[in-house]
Image (cartoon, rainbow, N blue to C red):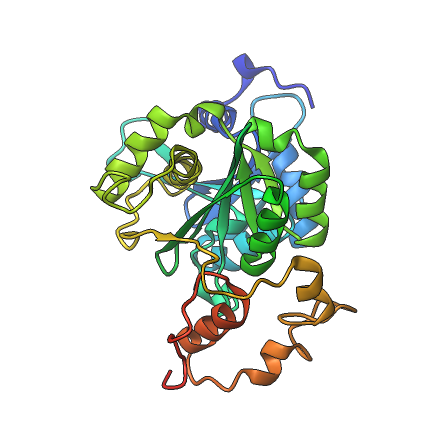
Length: 331
């Protein structure tokens, strides 16, 4: 549909101006008690959500395709869109309509992606929902992981001839739902396809400047209130991966994540390594046939009483960084 913005109503011009800032997202635009989606977003969302596609007068000769969902039950619709591979920008009314002079001011207050879902009811409480950042340079690769619902953050570095094996093994243990990459990492199409197909992870190429050391170090300092040295990070490459991850969280969440306070350094010291193929063939966390947790070793062992205990047990049997004395017997 060709849109002549000069003919649009003021409200629809405001919508289009906001949409311009989030071209890769489905924009949920608050109008009263509903979030509305227009034009291509409306067509796409109506199909995914299985809701009616209607049309709204917008100032053009052709009415704008539109669908909408009630604001009080929006979370379940957001999850459906995200699970279908969409990023969702939530645009709220930021002033009282009764006091507004003219058009009500609206702003995007959050962007929801697979790795940044905050609705715990939509998540498996027995496992973490990790966002991953990958930064690749000539000398090696660094990975950073964060679960914004628990505040856990991890970072690790992989060098040498076994670099890629270490990366894949770590990804298999964390099983992130979303990954942001710098350009050099994203240009490895074989790796991107492997992460998407084998790990069922959404992958995107993120801003190159976010992974620059200077920018990343500033972001780490502003987030934790500590330098990388105080956090125990002694690698510039690891700082770049962590900074890229934190920049993405800042862009999508648009608020300070006060529960993110510390970073744990991933280490293989004193642990037995199991590669990604053995993890799958041994069905440690999921079965080979249908990738179901039921029937896996973890499922059989899991007699924990709490969600926290379930997540700790998963880490104990999956992650290389956990120490032998950690236990979930009392959780």
